[in-house]
Amino acid sequence: MSEGTELGRFLRARRGQVRPQDVGLRAGTGVRRTPGLRREELATLAGVSVDYYTRLERGRETRPSPAVVAALGEALQLSDDALHRLHELVALAAGQPPTPSPRPARTVRESLRVLLETVRPAPAYVVSRTNDVLAANRPGLRLFSGITDWPWEHRNITRYMFLHPMGRKLYRDWEEMAAHSAGHLRAVAGADPDMPELAQLVGELVVKSPEFARLWERYDVKERGGGEKHFRHPEVGSLCLSFEVMTISRTDGQRLVTYQAPPGTPDHDAMLLLDMASPEEAAPPEGAERQEGAEL
Image (cartoon, rainbow, N blue to C red; front, side, top):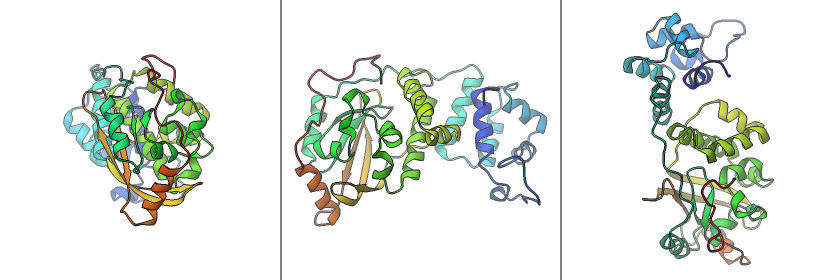
């Protein structure tokens, strides 16, 4: 996968995920050596020559027209997030890299810390662009069973999901959650591909988690603004919580994540148990937030 440009690797990865029957083509008989679409099939669907598409995928063509980009996106059945990523990679291949974002802020405003306590017993926490946990209320921290085994500077939702012993057990729909988490980091990479924190985290996960390495190579781009998550918590049992993700202004990408359940339901009772459990730290000690450049 080292050949060519990031654009070419993206196209190869996405081409391999589209079956001929998904786009109205006959799969034919026998075993196909190529997973997904062949180059000539995608080129036909996009209305370009096989030679042109091959040069594009191999990095020898770096300036596809907007019409070609749109046609490729349609042929590959890209989501809005993935199509946005394709446009970013086209700009990058053409020598127009995205403007780097400022270094992410690690300090959480005091008003947000107050808000985290105000919404209890609802679990809530603040994360960075790369899913580092910057602050949390008690139920928000206890929701991720065992994450307090790690020091604050190591607590990251994606790292927890793939590397903590409880990560796979906690989520009932682990495969779906894992794909969304890897896809979120792909979206971050599109906006700021040279972010040191991202490179360190992705490098660690690729080496230590075969599942993450596989998902990372799929080049899926996913952003999730809310929905439901199902947990199998070792202390409070099964619970289904709706959640919202809100970007916090003037923070270089910090997000507030809150969970909730209707009062009087078993899920709400489970939230109460999380909040009533034995006290433990829910925020870094004053002045202990990670400084810029700190190792993940």
